[in-house]
Length: 110
Length: 112
Image 1 (spheres, rainbow over the protein chains, first blue to last red):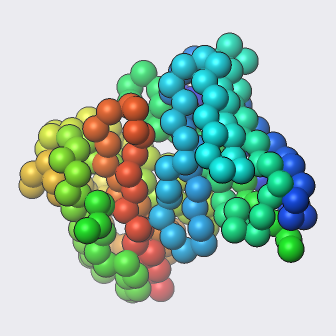
Image 2 (cartoon, each protein chain N blue to C red):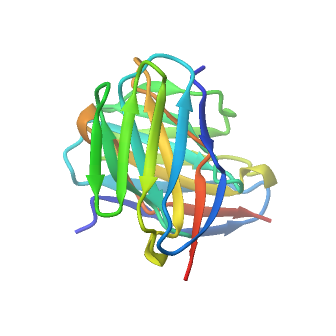
Image 3 (tube, one colour):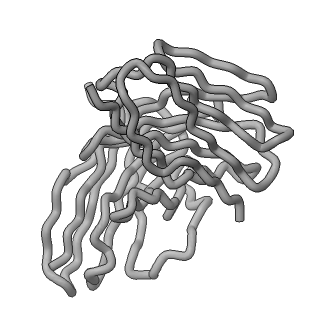
């Protein structure tokens, strides 16, 4: 079974700082997704990464994919309080099953 | 106009009862899913249907039975509810890999 590991699981940071969330997965896949979940809410799609070297940016968030290292990163630049949420990476295997990481709970302090 | 809608949003029930959660999507997607999110926020797939046909059936107690009357609907029926069934259940749909999943707002099930 495909394993997806995120770290850190919890991240408390000051506004204005930069940080990176890491997502490692155990078997070959070139389809990786990042989602955001606010407390008590559904999951919102952030990024879809479909090839090695893919990089996507939206506002203060940038995601990248290295399929050879089986690693994706979600980089946060100059964090603001509105980014506080739980972030999930998910990997799609060859049988169209999504495997989610355990999530990174981000708290950005003013 | 909600893309993936689930009802009810909250469900509190006693052990041993039978309950259903409904899901509908208006995106024209062919594939629908049920996921369970436990208290530690871990998401795990339960079932997947493609155009009314069951294609993924994870190791889930047979008290859980999905039903897809058409490709826009995927309902989840749970018999003899147990305390451990308490969780948030998310419905999702997808069409292609390019966009990933669209999730419903979730149903918070509490078994007392």
